[in-house]
Length: 153
Image (cartoon, rainbow, N blue to C red; front, side, top):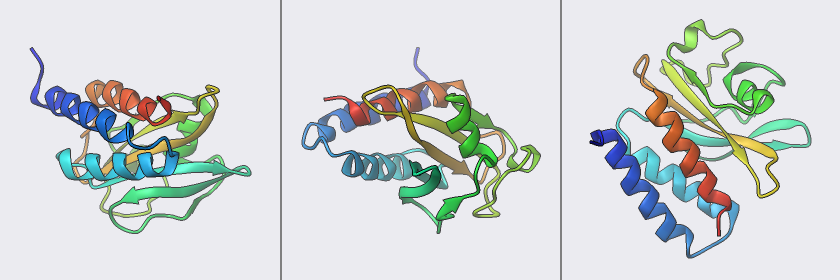
């Protein structure tokens, strides 16, 4: 039996597949994905992308409070997602070495690498919550599937 969170993710994936059928553009898809997650998932305080650009990690489309425009190189949760190529779940951002606090209200975070059609990491989806220990494996699996939709079709 699916949990309510799994059910919500399932509905979001269906809605995104329908919306993404209307454009193949990466940025419109990212912006739409952000808006849907930000407004449909409980506890998502900030949802956005950081994208690699000439060795720098720059803010892309996002929903929420003001973002850090550029993240210091090789530091923090987003860079960990970039360098490892793995989803990173941080139950308490204050205990993550080198955490970059763009908004002090953030308590937990999940970062999901974004792979392009050539299977190259081009950035991350970064989601913050005001609640400690908000993210789990259900989030990691579903957000990975959702991010993969950006380059399908």
